[in-house]
Length: 254
Image (cartoon, rainbow, N blue to C red):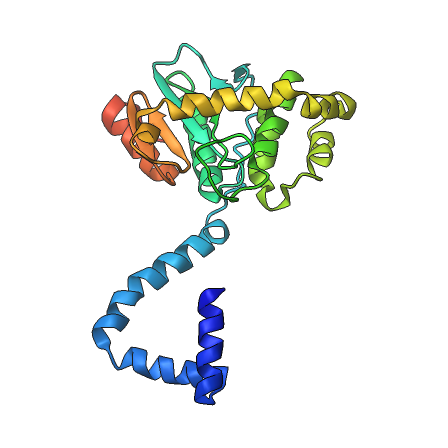
């Protein structure tokens, strides 16, 4: 706001309008080749971030909810599997959605070897005291919705629905989502009002805060642990598959 006011005052005093000011800045910018070249990576990074959900099908659920692999709440796959993957994730984070379905695909591809555990780490001031400004303002509510779905034995259905319909997440949409995944809406609403559901999310946040990554100052998502090895940021299925095959000697992807 301060910058906008300063620019407006300057243009008023100089007797110029916004268009002429932009043209002058544009000419001045390209008159400095070093500055222009340095700005290209920043522009490409910003464009890539904006285009990520459009380029990658972050809603491509592997469709395994009827495969019998949901053996424990918030655990996907065989609990006895030797490769344990833990995801610390936020339902309003587009990179988390892409990464999550890559992790689900790992369990689908290597069901005897890989198990996935989901831990809530919403970047929302409501339940995460590491966040000191408004950011994902419905992420704590989304995590509570998943917790309440877990109480009715449909955590993974709600989990996938939230990731697949990120743009629809809001405080007034959770009941509709509950109906979409087949929950008893009355019980769901009571759970969402129960402070215990928020406490359950805060327990997960505390678990995230205890990780080495967060202790080192990283407050972002997704954070992935494959065994005791941490990975931060978006994770493609191809990269994850290559890592699992190289480090753990798993067979080639079917």
